Image 1 (cartoon, rainbow, N blue to C red):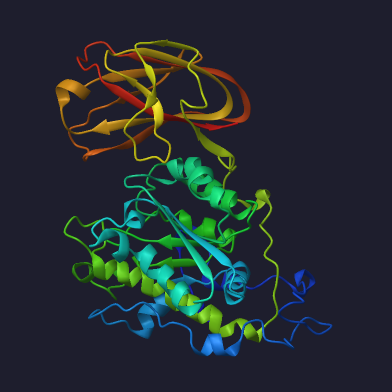
Image 2: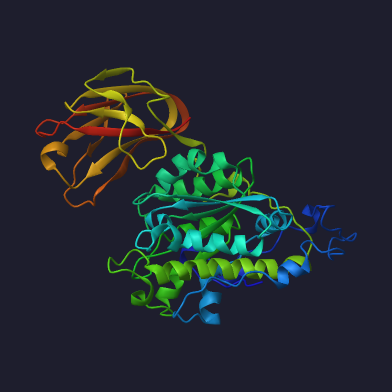
Length: 431
């Protein structure tokens, strides 16, 4: 199995200080259908997966003319982490059962700049390896990527967009869009939410980047704490092993087809290394680290989004509840065409407003709202920003406390802004 070393100043430790081993033999359990182990749980007396499947596994994703060296693979597989749950996915697929693979992230996961987008994105390409390696299994593919979203939005929509499908494997990608201070806790909370969910999925963290190789470096120590495998092409760019012009688009942010193929290649090389090694050791149960070991308080680990089909405004003037334009999976929000006022009462420890912002039609969208929480000014949001792109979902975090309490949220038009059109797509909440 490939297990690349990693030196990260943000972790405060070298690779030799990081425990990437499996659980101790005390945590080993016996899967009687696939293997038995000796008294000390050190040898496998039956194959966990047929050697024929291993010998005939699909090749890693083809990257075309992009030359992939052993150094690129070893560097890109940043850390193997604990592969117990991933191995369970492979055993499940080898038995011909249904396996659900979900991808949660921003525009790169959505396939931006891939052409055709749906079938050239890294998510689709890497899922194909599972279908080719385990042709008798029903591999269900969930792409929950939404452009220009970070892990705050990700942790709030994870339940409705990913967890409701009971995923077996979730690949998380937010390292380009997580640049705010709150993202350390939202990302930490997201990984914990996924790992502790009912279907106990394997989780893989993707460390992608823009042209310079920069990414949200706080993700690495969080992933290490959870022993979550990390796959990165950020390291390839910073070390000069791959040139941006060979993998990235002109916008200096998104990968082009060759970049998507490279990400998929790193993932599938990792899958191949895990599958190749699976019969050399018994199954060990992954245990989610206690929350006291987390990097943050993980106060977002029970987050969700409330929509107008579930939440009613306690007071509203010129706002209508119903269908609105949105990239979110639920299109029930609140909309005004007359600069209305609206108020909500919720019991929560964390709150945020999700809304639509655009860079077009300033006469229509140039409206600004002041937000008040319990009559205290909390922030300002605008439906128009000339420097933003297109039309997209944006959010404003307005409350974060350690315990839940009843709060009143009010949105009031700010004086001096002539626009009248505004859309709220949902209320982010942690109860």
